Length: 476
Image (cartoon, rainbow, N blue to C red):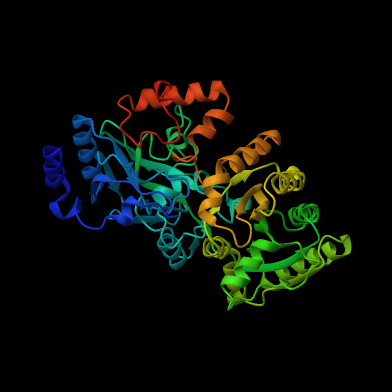
């Protein structure tokens, strides 16, 4: 291995091949539940260096684990504990190559932090709409590798929908340049969509061309109390009807989830948290290019109709962007508050919107019956059918012991219910290494066979992120 290390140093420079010291930032997952050991952390500075690193590792038969901001939740971007895998960090490749105003596109390197891209787009007079809690540290390459979702999917779609082209290094070290930014290109298989969401198992994303949008003239945010999830779904239907494409965000939050925010972040004002008759709240956002007055009139008319229909019992509308940000900050603090409460079991699921109330009612009752006292942290992107249906240990219990004794059982119960309701056990977090067995259980044999054929065809050495997403048949 010393020969490979020296070769890697020759490619990226000795300072960018890390083998000693504290490598926690690269070897430990974001939730601090898993820790691996890398042969080396390699930090290339450009696409050609990535290609040369991949070629060197392929010749040595050494596996590569690509990594962006290391903010994933499915343990898909840290090395295993063998000490034989190269951790390839893309963080040095963070340049915004250019904005094409007429084409409404931006071309950016994979290591660019999402928030940096958002700000660059805004400074140029455009909107880049991908938005999620980790946007201050996650990277565009990682967002695309996991097909990240976030809070504005209801209007703009996932990361895949925002991507017009990619630059990718193949498992053989070749470079595929596909960042032309065309909206129409019907020349064979869509390699872009194949790579997006593949979690670094089919190729290493080094750059991407992404869609931009005009900045909205008006942006309105409301926080509404709803009597039930059924009423939240009714409100969503009204919002689609009254706001049309202007509906950009629709988040649902359970009372216990918001209670954790109030408990652990007491400086944040959580609307309606002290009202016992409010089991759920909804955060909805309307962005439009019409005048502020006209947009606000339509928005407030929607809420009036919702009051009359009985699907909203109380509501506050942000008076300005500062208040809107404060409301969103409450929503985005739920995962942090849950972490403060202790280790927990996370589920990132999607169900048809119309079936979410029945799923939650049935699964809540099932878990309470099977494991009395569990606390359910239910929140997420109701607008696109994606729930973060998380489970916290009973109050006062040992969180680590709870996970050790109940995590597998709870996962089985929840995912079996998801399958029963014809949903997906992974909506936006990916499969990583945590959910490989779940994929094999819940995906159809035909789909699994196709996935394995694609992996064999593109990566016959199984060199890129092995053990993630899909295992070879012989490894089962």
